[in-house]
Amino acid sequence: MFVANSQWLFFANALMCTDMPCFTYSQLTCHLSMIRPSPKLLSLLFLAAMTLAVSFPQHAAAQSGTVTYTHTIVLDIKLPPEMDQLFEQFKDMIPESVTTSYVLDFNETLSSMRLLEEEDEGESTSGFRKQSAGGDVNIAVSFAASGSSGLGPQLIASVGNLDDGTYTNHYKFLTRDFLVAGELPELAWKLTGEEGMLLDRQVMKATATMDTVSVEAWFAPEIPAPFGPDNYGGLPGLILMLSTDDGNKLYEATSITLDTDIEITVPDKGRPVTQEEFEKLVQERLEERVSGWNNRVIIRGN
Image (cartoon, rainbow, N blue to C red; front, side):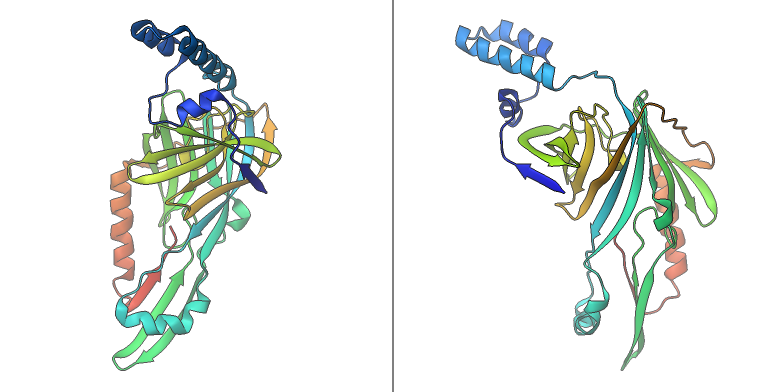
């Protein structure tokens, strides 16, 4: 269970909650030499910088381990107005959210995320047929989460590499293997000063924005591994809870096992493509498969 409160941890956190840029200790002392602060202000800023340096080490030795997350997606169901009445009759068949589980392995330089195998049982689809004046209307509700098998691509592994700042995703799509490589996201995290407990570990809240998507993370400073689910990271601690899209997508850690010997290999099996090429390929193939489904609505949580 996750428990949060609004206690401010350190004076340094209060500084980081403002819109001012965050400085390292060396950068801060350089700026102080230029602005010539009063002795009182200098003492306060020096204390804040030292607290920041001690509490959030930039190069702490990372640990190795395994984390299991639940991934919950709130389904956003949008139907044309002419189907509102039909939807009301069958809305009880459609869940409000879909939950799957993922496993994240990490060591000093690499992280690898994959769908929990026992839950990778393919795509669950329910549906119904409704007779109307214009003929039959088929509605299929597809509950395939990202990475599961079925119509969409199956994520075999997603590996992030701190050494070169890149990620490699291994997908299987229509019996073929693909390798999608790119750069790890660099987020301008801001600490909010809020703390909590998750899995009996102290966690701290940080927020960021990637493109137009809001990101909220709770990380554990006592586990100095700058990793998290879905290749989010860059914080001075392992991310145990992550939400995006205003909470509509949520990862929450359910178990942690720390180990000193986790071996991770970067995937090398498959056809190398860019993210844009892969998304275009998937869209084209899916459009081909559903082109013959007349009057059919697919509701996906992805």
